[in-house]
Length: 122
Length: 107
Image 1 (cartoon, chains in turn purple, red):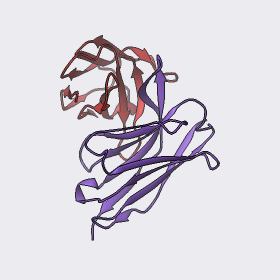
Image 2 (image 1 turned 30 degrees about the vertical axis):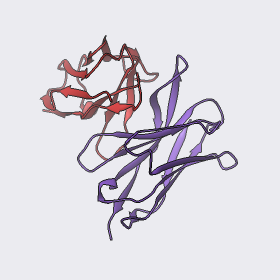
Image 3 (image 1 turned 120 degrees about the vertical axis):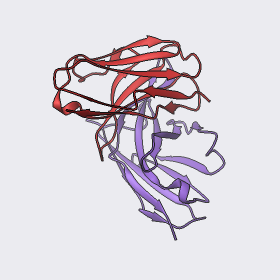
């Protein structure tokens, strides 16, 4: 059974860097799936941030691309998100998720972490 | 970027009712659409992918249809555990996008 668990600070100061890690159990992150981050601001809908493959190939949403970095740690079966120069608009629940390859293309998210709330405030 | 809209934004229904939720894409996305169910404080759970394929383990009362720009999610007989928010996601092109959600309350 695949399980994902986000970890990281719940409070980040404006202009600083938000760093989150997703620990995966029950499935190897080097087994042919993409691994993504999605966020949900308070009272709003879901926003895809980006996805990373075992080769290090990444895809990011254009509005965040200049501030986002994703990475993998195969030895720990973890993947990470860094979002720099944060503002209050980055306050959200951040989810990590496994993204299925369907017909050879990135598709939907079939397993999610429980989400971790992050507040940007001084 | 492809925008997704949903209707209605909220609805109330009774146990046993047939419920239909609509998702509309701003441009054609073939059948590259998934539906999720999210309960308060919980992660979304995928119900349908490729517009009409039922994800493994999801009850058969859930079904999806549509292609191009118009899609529907149907719950054939509403159960108490079906309350929450339903949203759609397109994976036809980057950036992947989600609909704003439909909040379903049980009467």
